[in-house]
Amino acid sequence: MRDPLCSESYLLETIEYDKEGICKSKKKIVILKDDMEKGIQRYPRDNQSIIYATFLHMFMYNTEMLTAKYSLGSHPDEMIEDYLNGIEYLENVGEEKVWYIDLLWMLSLGILLEVDKQDLKRLACVIEKQKKEDALMDFLLKACDIGWNHNTSEYERKNPYAKTAEIIQMALHDKDREKASKRLQQYIEKEWIKGHNDLDFKNAHKEPGYVGLWSFEAAALAKILGLDDSALKDNNHYPYDLAHYKNGMSFDLSWYGVPVEEEAKEEEAIVYGIPNNPELEQIIPAKFHSFVNEVIGDYNTLSDEEFWKKYNLREIWFDVKEYEEDNKAKNMLGTIIVFLLVEKEYILQLDYKEDLVDYIEDIDNYWGKEEVKLISFEVDNDQQYYAYVPKTAAIDSLYEVKLTEVEKIEEV
Image 1 (cartoon, one colour):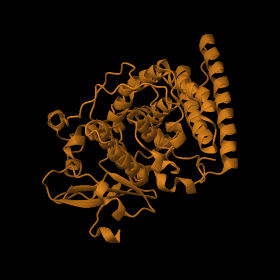
Image 2 (tube, rainbow, N blue to C red):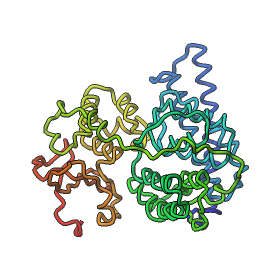
Image 3 (cartoon, helix red, strand yellow):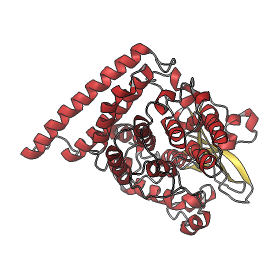
Image 4 (spheres, one colour):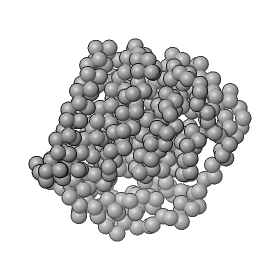
């Protein structure tokens, strides 16, 4: 067992369950393809779309199975075939959206397992097709020397992954690997779990379904940068043995230069105003005006399935049927905007058990020199949601979501 917080019996059950799920999915795809050849349509959704969604489900089964195997203590050699199967499933998801963390996990694990670079190129094609613009992925892919030429200073998930830029800069620009190693240790011990508070990583081991949580990207960075990670050898979120599993892969870092922030360029691209609901401009920063305006318009014009798919609501409603059921009254727009602005890292999401005092520094202020106040968004679930808005903001709701000013942080 690599993760003592896991249950060995549950890991074994999960592995068998996922194997069975993949097997059933393969049979389902065979039937659907046969139907397509015969011109048979059994479901409201077209056969090809169902096939794409089924491949995505296979990838998700495979991801959970690989994590469970690693937590259980499987040798890395035993994981390579499953890993390559995961790439094959990803190549067949069509227009289905894949979660960023899963793609980052796949890329990092491929580096740690030292799979063939041709297979990493296959994965890179998937990442490109998914239109992921992420500085950490760019660094990992370019370091692998597989011809990746994308370059962005943006992060799909700023917290915690933007913090890896400091590790990279210390190692390559400052030429101080000892300092970079200590920064890596800080990232794992203090920031990685905390940076996923919206996913409740901190308490995940207490909940049913826990198969382990591993910062594969941190180990991939340590491998690429040649960092001393011995202080993390016994950390149950750091895959130490994978970072030292092989030492035959070559990396190219000759292209590296200190990233230059493009804030001025970003400002020029901002489209001001929310014509679909101008009142919201009081509480939505200009950076997100265009996005929120589009969400409002789409919510009112797209079908539930089209909207669920476009905004990748699978992380909230795993199945479109669940979303359709919850959205029957068409009274969820505010809740959805809150969820999407959590992903954009404007709104901070905390589990109900978390103390705001411990996370207040993670709330970004997008209002420049304006005097601000802290508000909470009263969403109908067991989570907490916070953001800074101008002190002059005079609206008390975001559609059905009530807004409340947080007067004294220590009392929250």
